[in-house]
Length: 378
Image (cartoon, rainbow, N blue to C red; front, top):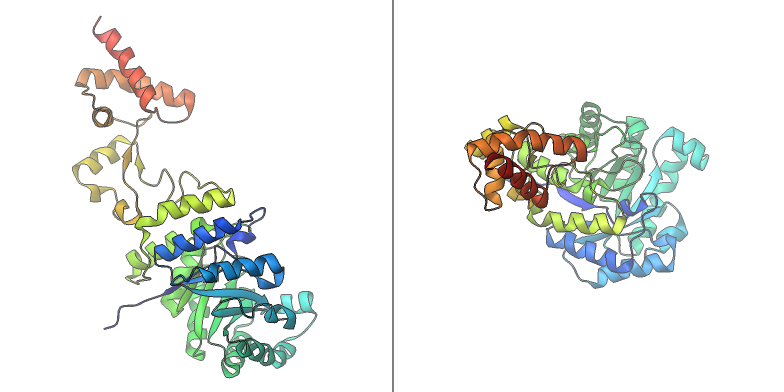
């Protein structure tokens, strides 16, 4: 039986850069593309050519790297915008259209019949440029499902290969996502790509649900970068598909920390301490019962081996530490702490954390031990 596979189309360089206040330099864009390719991401959405000469030059520059991933560009359903995507070295174009009545009426002042009638000529224009075509259904989560199926049928007849289902406002939950993608899957032969936003904190869950329902492609961004609350994080989606559903993506997350750091620096958006998979706290342990269990067997307190994502467990001392953790942490510094010293250190560690709001680092630990020893061994 064929192993299930989902194609990641990472949009860090397009939707990720649309985060308010984010603008990648050309060098940053090229390095992010290189690192995405290095970990095995097969498709990259790399820009919006209609933005101007500088944006088109950056798309060409990414294409000139001759990386393994296929490249996608984004366009509105407008003749000039589509024409701007020509001869840039991209393989695919996502033509974005308003799918909901809200967007049709209040953005374009048009109706469903107009869109169904006009769509084929724009798809044809993109095909004539040698580009493969995806239809990006903006605000699909608020669109009539029968109309989405009609859009898919029209796009498929016109020669498109993919439909992007965009939860533009991040308002879906996994059960509704599953139902909608399942309906599209039953009624269309197109590739189906899920594009989830995280306004309700459900982007990853919705992306996984879409994959279980028959989506073939998903959009992600590194660290969940993106407009407003961001997009589905690459690291969460890849790990979730593999660990929860046995679905492969070809992406190797062992090299992800360097990519995460690169995107955080280039975007000016620091990774939250408790961010799953890649945050500094994701594999940090303090509570005595957890540390004791972890030391007895890692699987007591790990859902997956952190080495799979280029990380490792870290034990720190704090309010909830026990004497065993004190001895282990000091052993990591090459210092042997006996039982009496460990017990004497605990209240000092708790006072330190209460005052400074972070675990003691190496110089602090050495100072605390020196203080304890000076009192115990006078």
